[in-house]
Length: 251
Ligand SMILES: [Zn+2]
Image (cartoon, rainbow, N blue to C red; front, top):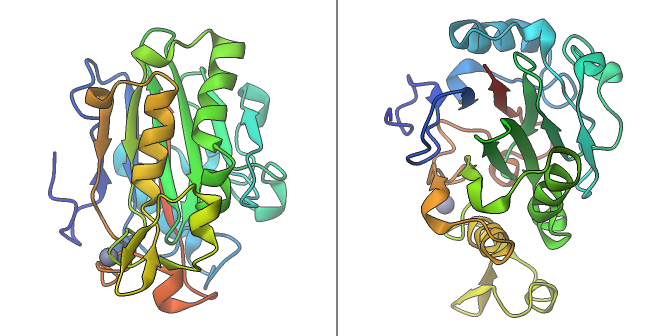
């Protein structure tokens, strides 16, 4: 696994010791530029996507993207969705924060600047899932709802899933309102009378409770705020900041 803290490295991301490489799983960094066609300066986003995805063997025109709204709406993506949101934001799937698919060479993308991306891989079907998990969606249990939908549609067994956590703002930096402690059943971290949320830990716990093995989870350990030099951070830069892309595709 490459050193993901190195700004020159584009984040090919390994899902722990998952048994095969039947999939591609990666995220971009600041050096590759803004990947969003909606947020930040979008004038070079298509060029940036091509630059990021070409070396991965992914055609940027095939991407399936969504209009993310911090919900727990999930979409089962099929061949007819190929290219939605790839060249224009308006063509993205409406109101969706997680994508699942079992079609080969159909790349799924989500965009983040502090929120967590969760990669899901079922080597048995095979099938994949990609989740955009900010605090609202995490509170709505989006990762677990995604694997439930994978079970319903694709017969995925949680015990055989492999999970990866992309870059996000970590509990070192993610100060939240005290009220959220109740929302998250007292799981916030308290330091000097301030409250911090550990998005990865909460998602991990939810997934474990749903039957995913801890030994099947891998974490990029990147904090977008601490490593703001190399990753976009909404908290650090405000509304107009760019977005990194998390991408996943079955080969
Ligand atoms: Zn941090």
